[in-house]
Image 1 (tube, rainbow, N blue to C red):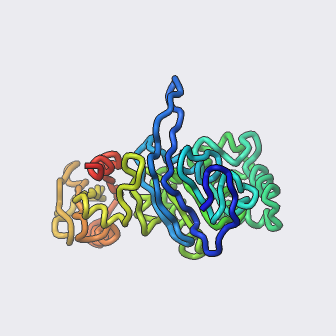
Image 2 (tube, rainbow, N blue to C red):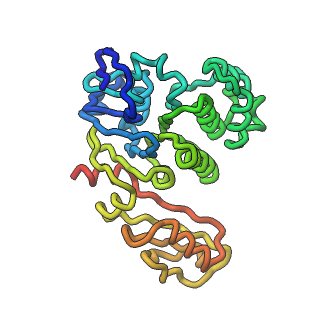
Image 3 (cartoon, helix red, strand yellow):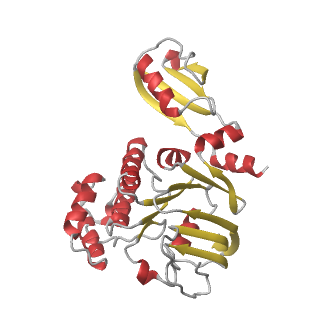
Length: 323
């Protein structure tokens, strides 16, 4: 373990990808820049190859954690170890081994065209295959058409995808992602999630996804951590959390035309029929079925125009875990 006093150890073989050990951290917030305690004894470990979701309510430290794990901040107490190294003291040794999306800290120069900004990043990382890597990632994240657009002129969704390209450029072992799908529509979110699933499952890249979007975790991460009062209040998976809290999710089905009641789907209950029969709201019972199974059942029985999953409010989940 490397402690926050700046002492250096060489990384141990087979070291965990990330260790957060009894970390306390306070951030300055608000007009008066008063310090507010964000973490108070936060501890967890991420092993190589894992995809771990850390669910935190808005304002509960997602960006602070990303900054701690990338060496932009140091904890007041406790320690953070990344690939067996201190992220603040050993940034040179970690160069290119950790990729990150950190809110309020872009890797891309805003005045440059996106392609040029990525090329500069490739030079910084001494990538011999920089152009091929940039081209491949831009195609996968559907950014080829905007490579000549200044970074500052990208839409928020495009900028988010560009930050992921930047994070993946050096082929890192660990990706630390602060709200990776923030500000995107459903199609944009799924595009990001698809790339991240491939990175984890096909390339073995370790993921830590700090988010307030439960759907990000369900789509990407077999393991879920929930932050409660500055510590980890739950360590499991989404079905286990839903079963523990008895949390019902609601599937909103918009139909092409009025159809029969969708009230016999296993593990669900029909909550309401609205809009003159063009919308049905279906509750998904925790522990009795999966969202994917319900979606497949609905599509097989009705002509669907749109599907929307209403997630439980993360703040409410955290409140109930704290009781």
